[in-house]
Image (cartoon, rainbow, N blue to C red; front, side, top):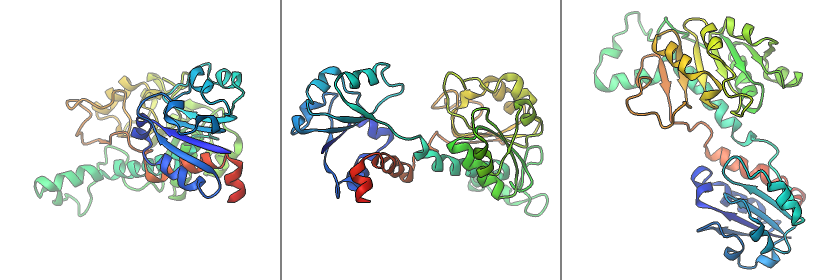
Length: 327
């Protein structure tokens, strides 16, 4: 089966290592050709469009005209900007093309969950603030109490012994729960859609009521994807219910929370924040969250590691029978 991989520059702006790694995985067992596109025209870019039986289109959704130009096409994986066209499945079906799908978004989950753990430790110990402080003068070395550099007004010190409260039990949340549980935290999670094993594997107690989850949080991490059902899931009332001094960790999408209320409480020194995602990106240079003593901030790069790129390609390759048989 001839497999054509086409990749658009807009895809490689986000996933720059996927296409080449996918080719390296498939080439021993699959007749595969990689084409980097200059525009959205698919068949015209391929050396032998009539011979293509499988299409992996990274960054371009094929139109009816594209599919007409690929008469032998039997199956396709397509990825582009989100959301995909509402008629994509119908379009492929009209041309007799089976759609290949990724099993989940787990390819970036490891990277995001580990990053969240790092942000948590940085938020507790004020590592970025102290790193920056010693560049300009030596005052940071003059600890009032030995080596103590934490801020006791907020959750600080070790993850061990902390009450970690998580919204979500999916690919990212369950990993983060397991890491913090391993380090000795008391972990509880709320996710009405997750099965019981999701909590057991993560070492998290299942909380049945979101309000109870918030009541005693020392570290609060809403870790659900953003969609119409989760946008604003953590309301202003929920944010107000977080105990004073709680560290809020944001690594999926900020607007699953009521961001104005979260901002208000952070700027009022009621909460600390460790965030890789924000309601406005990039953050304006004059944003009051920047450079604060109670905020750790990074520019939305938790999920983009070489590992995540390779996992994307590997998860996709497992959908192809020749690759599985060869492996």
